[in-house]
Image (cartoon, rainbow, N blue to C red; front, side):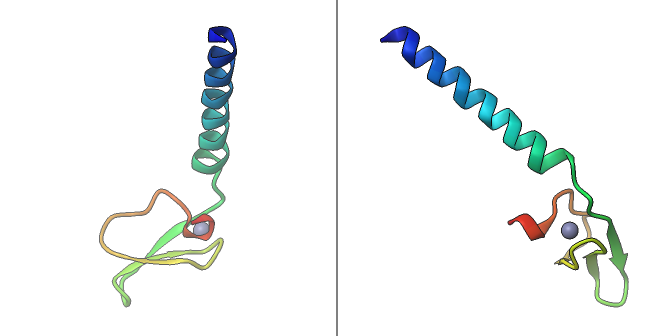
Length: 62
Ligand SMILES: [Zn+2]
């Protein structure tokens, strides 16, 4: 039983690492600051985020 739980935990951890790699690092997004609107616009998906800080994720996947 304990071995089964350990295998499940390792599998879940590997799945989370895979998800993080697939969604967090390999992004095609290019954020460009639009001074007129006071925010950031993604030239890849067309997303727009207000604020000063540059986003490091794509809102298309949210
Ligand atoms: Zn995007």
